[in-house]
Structures are given as structure tokens and as C-alpha cells.
Amino acid sequence: MKKLLLLVAVLVLTGATIWYFNRGGEEAVSPYRFVTLEQGDLEAVVSSTGTLDAVTTVQVGTQVSGIISHIYVDFNDNVRRGQIIARIDTTLLTSAVRDAEANVERNKAQLRQAQREHERLKGLYDKQFITEVEFNQAEYNLDIAVAATKSAEISLERARQNMSYATIYAPISGTVIERNVDVGQTVAASFSAPQLFLIADDLSRMEILASVDESDIGMIEDGQTARFTVQAYPDETFTGTVRQVRLQSTIQENVVNYTVVVDVNNEEGKLLPGMTATVDFLIETAQDVLKISNAALRFRPTEAMMAEARERMQRLREERMANTPDSLRQQRGQRGDGQDGSQRGQRGQGGFAGFSEQGSQGGQGGFGGFGNRGGQGNSDFTTLWYLDEEGNLTMAPARIGITDGTMTEVRSRRLEPGMQIIAGITQAGQSRSSNNPFQNNQQGGRRPGGF
Image (cartoon, rainbow, N blue to C red; front, side, top):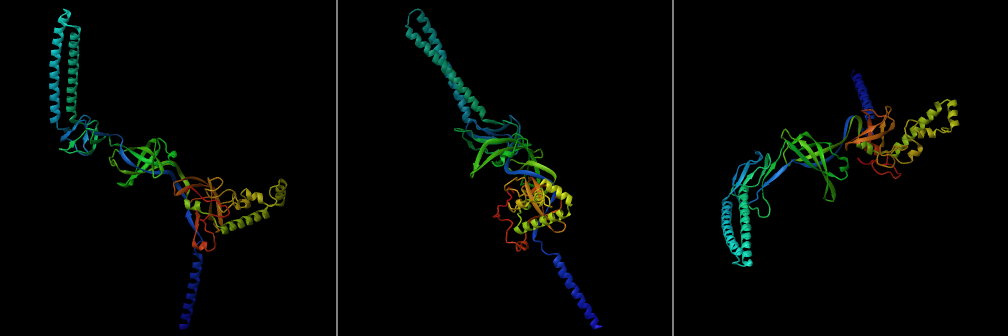
């Protein structure tokens, strides 16, 4: 009985060992690193940052100097146009008005005296009792008195106007977003009008002044949709519309930037002046398309992969030639296109569209002109590598569409959603080849660019 149990245990242990090693063989580490070909929407955007501000803001100052005696509004108060918002002490201004009034009275008295003297001398001049010089002097004195009276009246008007400037009115209806003075503070308007308040016209409509690099400004135009986020609401996305691309450029750290004005609707009042906005300008959209990680577009096959692809193509070509009837081969031979099958290979036959022996000599980037994006040739095409259902290395040429910087649209009849596309080589795969797929190929292969 013990021998029987021992035999059963040995058999179980042997079976478990065999199963374990077989499982390990099935789960051998793949030499490739894959990314999944996805289907969905894609957007090409230009990113920037800017500052939120009210569309119209007015700096409220003062024309006269003095001490602030009253302030009637505070931060965030809503004001109406013409509303009194502050007053300046009028003691000195009242004295200036009274002095101007007295000066007017004095000049009027002098004017009346000059008029009486002129009338008296005019009668004497008519009777030839005085000379013409004396009469001309009387006329001159009268003219001086008239001018002095006008000047005094203007000074009085100026003093009264300065008196009115002591009362500060709201120039527009809006919201007070800055108050720079307090009661008792002295303001001096000798050289420039000091800012007392800053009033925003309507905070339900705001604007973003975004700075866009010169390399991207050509893709921004009026009426374009813009999305942005602010740090106060990181999980919420707001929208706006490009209103203006300003022609004046600015240079910061040798980088040329242009200001783009984006109109924003702020009816909910969440957005506040001065907030920093991260803006994405929507350049182009694509819906329900195939998209792949840009890592797959940057991938470059190794020499071993190229050799495997060439061998498989040659094998498929030979099988096709062997299965072709003699009569058909003779007809093709008479047309001069296929005695050795090389021209058919150049037209994409043999299982690899666009592959040819001549194309393979051009570099590792692709076959027959379908290289990875960014090298010589048409940069709108690329080559994606994958393993077919039988585990054979296969490639598919694809046309490149828009990109969001991470994913890129690809179009090809060979591609389907869910396919695993080669994006790199693992260390297990690198041990089989001395070439690094991310290094430049000395034979002139293409290297992706722009991603």
C-alpha cells in the first residue's frame, strides 16, 4: 500500500513539473512591447496659458488734490453710472472759488471805471480839448479791463469746476474690483491722476489674453473654439471663442509670442478677474477613427525584423509563383512583368503592400516608400508592425491623420480596432539583436518626427 501511494505521489509530482514548464514556455516573455490600436474621437489642439480679465475696465481717478473725506463703495460693490462713490475735502477748493469770485468783482469794478474814463475823454476829444494820444490811452485801458474781467470769470469757472471734481462719480455701471484709497488719505494730482477705484463693466462677459508661440499662431483664427480650465475648478472645462489675434508681438527669453483674445461667457459668476487659464485652441477634430500611440510611429524595426520580413515575403512570392498556372505565367512573361516576380513584389504583391527588395535597401523605416513619419518621402505615411494570428511578423502601411500630441489618427484597410501594434523591443528582444530600435540607422532609415 505504501509503495502504491509513493508511486502515485511521484506521478503527480512529475505531471505538475511537466505542466509548470509547459506553462512557462507558453508564457514566455514577448520580445516586443505593444500598444493597442483604439477607435474613438481625436482632437488636434494648440495649448497656451493666459489671464482672465473683464472685457471693459475703467480706472477712476481724480482731477484735484486733497484729502479723501468720504468713501461710499467698497470692494465687489455694484455701482450705477453717475453714482457718487467718494468725496474729497473741499475746504481749499471752496477758498479758491471765493477768491476767484472776489477777483471777478474787482475786475468788474476796474472795467466800470475804465468805461467811465473812456466816455469822459471821448467828449473832450470830440471838442479837441485833449490830444489823440490821450484818447487812445483811454481806449487801451478799457480793452485791458474787459480782458481782465473775462480772465477773472474763466478763473472762477475753473475754480467751480475743480470744486465739482471733489465729488467722484462712477463713470460706468459695473462692479468695483479695486479700491486703492481710504478715508483721510491724501491724493496728489499734480503730475498724473491717481487711481482711486477700478470698475469692471460686466463680469458676466470676460476675456482671456492668451500668449501663443509664433510656431502655432498660424493655426489660430477668429471664431475658433477654445476650451480652458482654471485652478479653482480643476474638474470643470469652460469654453470660449477667439475674438482677435493681435498683430503686436512680444519677446520673452528670445521666444516670440502673440496675444490671442478669447471671449468667455461667465453668467454663473464662477470666473474671477486675474485667474490663470490653461487654454486649448481646437484646431481640428476627427470622430470615430483609428488612433495609435505615437510610440508606435516612432518605432523602427531592427535588422533581424527586416530580415524576417524579407524571408517571409520571398517565401510567399515563391508559393504564389508555384501556384500560378503555366499559361498565366507565360502571358505575364510576354508582357515583360514577372519572369522573376520582382516587379510584382514592388507593387505590393507577396503579402506586403509597398515592399520591394529595392525599398528594403533604403533603410529600416519601411518598404517601398512606406517609412515611418519624418524621413525622406511622404511624411503622411507610416509603417506599423504587428504579429498576425499565426505569430508571424507583419507590417501595414498607413496614412497619418491629425494628432493630439499623444495619439495619432491612422488609416489603413489592414488595421482593425484592438490590434496590438509593436511600439518597442523588450530587453528579451534586445538580447537577440545588437541594434537599438530607437537609435539612428547607419543605412539611411527614416525616423519619425513631429511627435
